[in-house]
Length: 215
Image 1 (cartoon, rainbow, N blue to C red):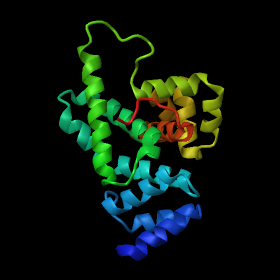
Image 2: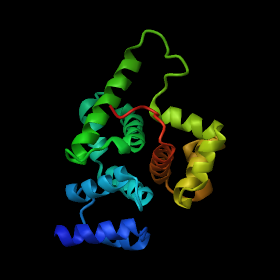
Image 3: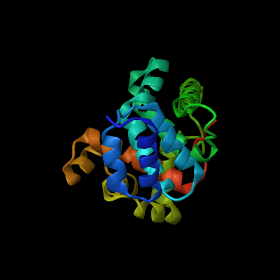
């Protein structure tokens, strides 16, 4: 297993050089929820320098794959049916707020704070006596609407890797249900849902525009 400062330095060099295959090879040797690796990727993403876009992609993939965000959300919600939506809202808020990550705490602590706020937002929407006005949807719904309607956002979408761009385009631009997207791409529905979630988050990170906040 790759550990220690040497591994961290190798990962940093690979990401800064935008060596996708090299970075992924190094990450394959590290547990997906390794805190030091998550912190390293978050620092590179927040810095906004060379390799920042790749760092964002890798960070979001590992946060999602590790289940750390889902565990935070599931632990705070009694409504298990809402966990997927609030987890996606959290990932999008994390992506949109990465520039504010200072590195003064572990990235998981920072993400936990964002997840808590997204849970509170969800509960507030659930308790509302009247439906929320159209300008107050959750981050995932807002991001989906922006992808569908804004040419500038669709231009950012066009720059995503194929495995994210295709499902997001079919879901948010063409408006297809997840099941049909999965059938067209010949991928499991669960895979498509994860790719749409991560793809939306990557667009939010590139957009650098609030879509739910990182409070």
